[in-house]
Length: 382
Image (cartoon, rainbow, N blue to C red; front, side, top):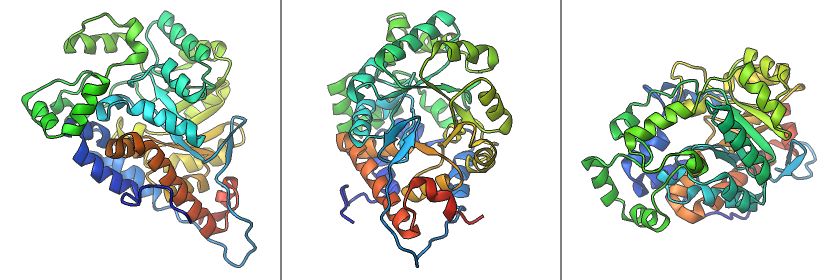
């Protein structure tokens, strides 16, 4: 197998270690951490890796293909880039780097409402193929305007988020004064001086900001005012009365992200949602919750013929993608893995990480004698 990535970093763990050395501590801890005591972030990956797959050797094999069809679109791999907030804080221009890499590799890129490039710029870089994730605004007028912008930009899929009814309790971020822009305590200033490459790139691209939200934000907000603006602008809890107007307005595919129960899956189907992403927000919201692989298996088996079932949270490798798909996921998404890549390698990070994951997944498929991604469930050891 010809390796098309930087062989100095042949795993996501290698990229994580490099990223930790390249970016300030407050930025790395925001990227790397979960909530409370980090129980669920660890559980996500450890319980996913308990899934075992069975190979078939004495069988004619005609080659394995990563190509996967989702919502009528053919993608070159069964994984995409999950939405991540504050991307430009972790590495300057990272949202644009990843959007461009996703487009070049023909995989989905999901832009977050609260990241650091705009809907229009992401659409430009992906020729209208970027998905958009909406944090639900408190005001209908703001909701309708943002959705209209996503429609005009050509976004094929709108993702609405149900697992942030309240912001997660994240002790490291509280200590670090995380906000946009970050609170420059003496400790944070010293961290910036210790990461000169990050500092120079930040000077080059400018202080990160919530680009999609700029038209709605009063100018010159200080940190306290910015926090109040965000609290007043977004109402996180979703329910039928909030989802129905979005479903009526949005003519493209609509996906509900953050599903962790059969009840929410049934509600999504009843409300005409096209797909769900089984997720616990990367272990950043409910430390006492389940890992994502546990509800995924039940949801996929019960509802997989009624709605597209996808998964994120806890995946860090090609074998992890295989485990999730064997357990019933139609498609998978990763956030931290790609941010480790771009934080470690800058503008090369997106291409490297996608190429690495493709190579890992291709090897798993060849080893299993799995020709199509839809065949993964045939190899699950139950």
